[in-house]
Image: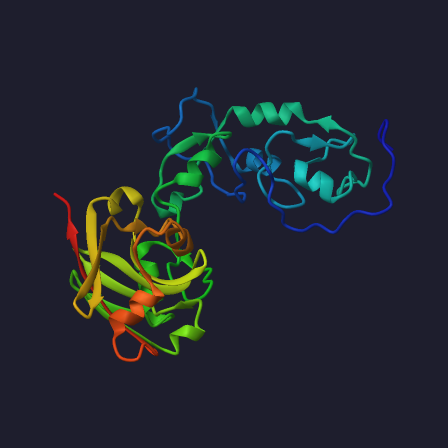
Length: 307
């Protein structure tokens, strides 16, 4: 038995967990030595990671990279802080009590390492100090995009061409070429519907893709309809474009002009920020004409590129 250690009777079965260091964690990456790229954060140059050192920094329970505090048992087996709690302070390797021993040597080794971004295969070739890598990956321009489809929770991620094909083939969304928007939204018995999402429409314009959303939801005490546009790309590119939306009827007209939001922002985040054309239901039914028992709205608009 190791000095000061005692055997544990039982160890919690290991499950993948998310460690809590700074802003998140990243899954372990088996990258071999790489050439140096541009550093996104200031810092001195260190030792390039190799598979052996990388494996030392991998938690044996959750397989995530470990960040301070890195714990070890009296026999020198290490694991991350979150998993130390999960295994009830019992080493999953030798089953001795973990105690509160920090592996300061391994933490110091990690400080000297530089690793490639986890999105290296997607085009990011920068190298980062071990403890700066997570911050970069949180905002890396090459990180995958989430599927922008709003009709259901979709877990698919990928680059823009992959998502465009996914929207067309899997979600069967309408694809249109051109920068002019002209869509009709119809709903029977609108008084019975408090929340609804219409089929997403994708526009190919200026060689880029834009998603037109239309949905009904509660805003305060009253139901509203909202139309808005999202850009399939990053926010800095989205700001190069503008769009307008218009809806009306019975001699009245309601207009909106704005900048499309990046799909980095979820459709719910955009909707909740009210960044789009908002129509109160009573006004929408007035625009629809007739006996106000059926929603019949025609939303028009255009997309243009700012010079």
